[in-house]
Length: 179
Image (cartoon, rainbow, N blue to C red):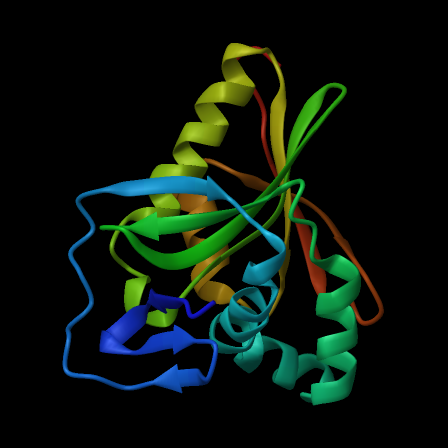
């Protein structure tokens, strides 16, 4: 069965790997989520490398085998969702609804789709959901990911803890009004 998913900058991910073509990335007028399926594992790995590779490399160095192993252990199609923009796979999100909080475990967006309001919209919706339920939205971010930290701060999340070897991660929270 042949499949192709259009992604950033006119590139396509197909069963044969990345294929470049002249189609430009679509506008972000239609952002949606779809359940991840096992076939999305490779897309999610390549997305992780494109979106987070710079930060992982800065902190640990990029080890292909270690990163593939991490992806294999982390990939959870029962909870992960694929972010689409204009019908094109543009990223992924992992949300865990816990007792007392909503935890944003991961949000990754392909670089060609970053800066278009996708993350702002999705995280804003999660904050609103959490606050309607009287809960906090909680997430962790690499300290070196200043762009993500700035986005989260603009959305009202506050740094509440620093942890990890060398304080590489920051926990951020958005508490409900009066919480």
